[in-house]
Length: 246
Image 1 (cartoon, rainbow, N blue to C red):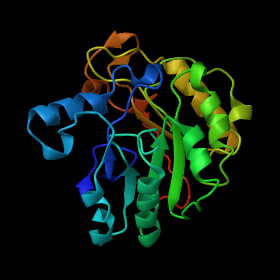
Image 2: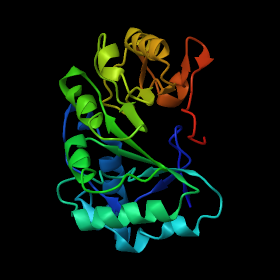
Image 3: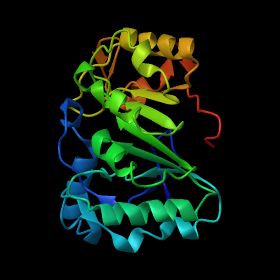
């Protein structure tokens, strides 16, 4: 099992890797930078760098994990990238169905393709479907996600690089919201007011809210992500939805 350092999950499973930039949130992609480093280190799975690549040899990995766990699917890519064939996505879903003891988090920046795929394929009961939203330019992704017939929808608002405003109507029927700031030398600032506004809206709607980290900026000052930490107004706010085992 590949234990994950991502705070809102426990393990990562990468039956495919790679992606291409879809919106402003992708500008400083951590996965792209990591893939380049792994390629330079001679890692076989990253010989294509960040070009979308299927890894059939990894499909059965979750079958070998004895303990039930929370699994982020494709932390190093986007399963619904247009270069990944439906036939391979079907195999990923088959593995998820074969391992009901695990809970899977499938996150995409391409909810339109995800929605299209699941019009002809069943959604496993142990899968949460999510999309990334970093600013108002991609709010439409939420509406697209909501067209998928599942009660298990989530949003990753990371890196949050803009004020989303009042979106309570849009957040209806979302089961979980994750918010975090951007890390790295080129990180863009996330303001506390944006985070608190989103938290308040989630609280009003009864949506579990998970604050992951400040990233490189806090209170208008740039430091390391580690130094800034993950406390919001001095408190840890890391809520999970019912049925998702942390």
